[in-house]
Image (tube, rainbow, N blue to C red; front, side, top):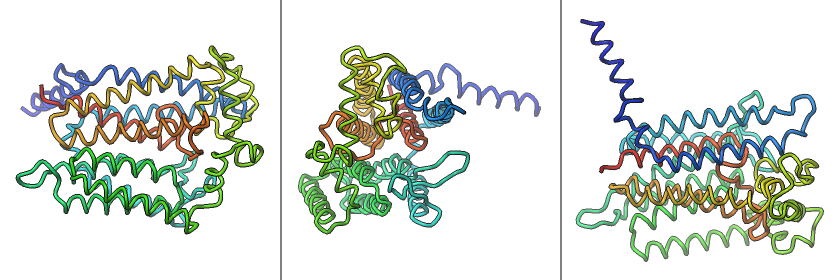
Length: 387
């Protein structure tokens, strides 16, 4: 009897994974194609921007990027097969793990890269940035707390709102100790979006906005920002005032994008990219590679694909039949939208440089994994909706 039972169990597991009723067949195909296309473009742009780094191993960064994408795809697939309602149970664990990693960063275990003590070195040329993983973890916890309405209303309980603000404050406080202003801004947007979409009273929203503005003012006027962070905002107001200093990145980014014109110079043919005139061109400034080598048409294609991801995320949030899933999807959309606007904006001179990568396009191990996990969450919400 044991052998047949074993075979039945094996068939059951297999049917769950690839059967006709499996979650994989209920995934959002448009979202999948958009993310796959962005990952393909990302691979080309990373290869172009890093192939001249060394003559010994010109494809080293490309191989690392492909490995990270493969790991991210696996994580995305695993998360997408989980019933999104079960993610509620994992929310406190994910948040606690994210908080522990953030606390570990500010110990001697953490490492400083580009002036920010935000990394944990893993060896083999790989590093982990816990603040990226804190984004989906915070989304899950906030959605869990704010998805339960008070008795007799459709609004969250004041206690849950208070706990949400405390959870967000702890996360943002640890990130600011690194310091990482850009990620703190993203976490603020995530928190605000969940609060707004949860249906809290307008006076609560007004109070949170006032506190945020006051906090930002205190940070600025008390000199809590690092000198390089202040210089970035100053250079944004007038990049020409310091073209060889803090205005250099913004100036070179505009030159690179403008030189691509309509059709671009062609893959591997960009002078700014080949000459490495734009710093961090494979990460924060990867959009300049698209603009220079693929031109306006290529750059707008990247933006359009990101727009498809956002539209599908909005659709998933609207079609979700439970508050938890809707809040998770809405927060992910706001996160991706804000980060896309800031990244593209800083390369074309309409936003200050903040060091935020372009979702699904920039090279970045932990950021890529966090993005893929979040897409898996969107797919899980889409697959789990009741029809």
